[in-house]
Length: 227
Image 1 (cartoon, helix red, strand yellow):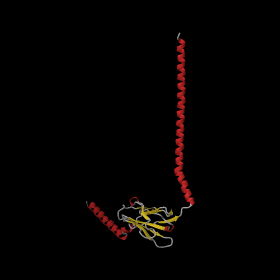
Image 2: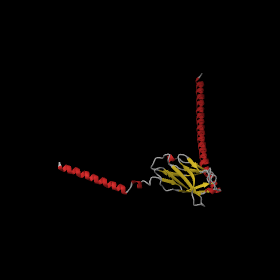
Image 3: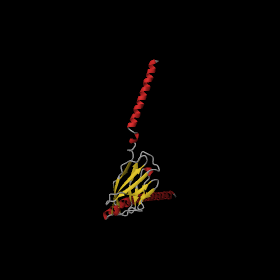
Image 4: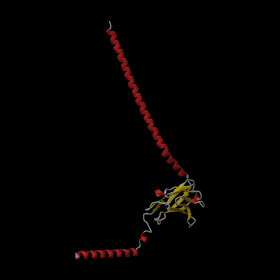
């Protein structure tokens, strides 16, 4: 009995020592410091964004977060012209879209994403050569607020003759070639049907001729048999 009592005292003492050490470690290394950066929170975007004058261009940007999307999620898109070192806001989102109402991109920015699918893309309508800029996209979905901010280089050019020619060629491939294939298949089918009908007519004519000859022979036999 004395041995069991001493064992219980030793176990209780060991538990107290382990608890005290755990508390000391928690004060020395606060848990908050490990939660400042969440490596599951990432923003992805293509760096090169080519576009043509007068043709809408989409700035594709996606995000991945370890937290559920709530109405506290915010999106901030900014741009920097080539001749400037300062960035300017062009779009803000928090439960609703707030495109810029002044400046270079006035009345050109529209929302083209879906935060519940991790899409934070925006669209620029009727771009011009002066719209060439470097864009950035930042997404904060509490508690995920820290992440690398990707850059997108928008380059607007005029669509040249070569580009138009390639577009026409692509249109021909996508529209005219499949149509030609369908027409050829229909012609082959029609010719096969015509050949089958012609064969059936010939077969019917031969059968009719054989029946007529047979009847004539039978009539002749009957006449010869009569006195």
